[in-house]
Length: 321
Ligand SMILES: NC(=O)c1ccc[n+]([C@@H]2O[C@H](COP(=O)([O-])OP(=O)(O)OC[C@H]3O[C@@H](n4cnc5c(N)ncnc54)[C@H](OP(=O)(O)O)[C@@H]3O)[C@@H](O)[C@H]2O)c1
Image (cartoon, rainbow, N blue to C red):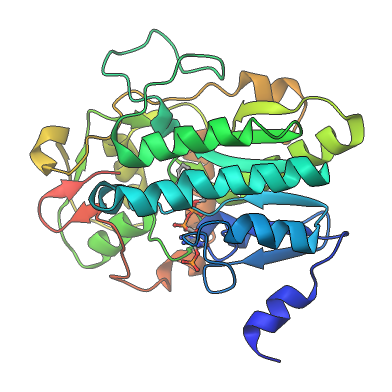
């Protein structure tokens, strides 16, 4: 059976539809699903085609939809806002409408990039804090959130800096490892703080939230799910190099030196209190999660070098998200 037909053959009212199923998070969601899952990538359903997502969900009538698909190349999105808004926002509106009509839940994965404030906040961002999306990618994800809220049974999960099993995108951790393996000096921004998050823990938390809401019929809404506390990317890169047993210098640089098309949030740390109050699987300490990932060894050592899409690391000039 061709791969496409195989992926679609399991679809039905018992299965959860995962859009973005070929991505970093989508693949992990498929590793530990509480229900049968049908995971789709772009070749199965191209969200860039207006109305395609709406028609598809109406037709297959799944138990729930997890929308984990996005155009995640932040600088690429600046160059083609129309495509970015279609994939990251309009497709969410289409799915939300279909889910509302079918009376099924929608889980939408969003980002800490909605908090692009230039002022340093006195604490990590909570779910109800006012957003400040800067740049096309962040704005598209914010619009996606607003669209998802039009579905009564919605979960919006904001997360940050994913690493773990590699999707199409190469993670920050992998890029640092690739550079270090090549013996290059790793230069990383020291003036951006975030919550790098290990995808197996995020996937577990997403399934927990969906199960809880389906069982109880309540607790729908927006949640921050990340490893905590926030760290600077420089500090995090130092831990990556140290714990992987590689011996290359890690040097701090300032964000403005990167000359990126769009500035990344400086202080987009997320507060996970609301999620943890529900009693879900604990999200580890940021550095403990990294240590466990690196201890897994083979998954990162064997990862392909140089498959990066969307520039995170520039050889010799530093790293940025
Ligand atoms: N990665 C991060 O650090 C991060 C941080 C915060 C939030 N998030 C959010 O978390 C979610 C998952 O991110 P990720 O890291 O898993 O992403 P990823 O590895 O870049 O994968 C993106 C996924 O979206 C799919 N996709 C992209 N364009 C599409 C299109 N036109 N039609 C259909 N599918 C399309 C890709 O399918 P193909 O493989 O077929 O192209 C892939 O499955 C996204 O919503 C992202 O915004 C990510």
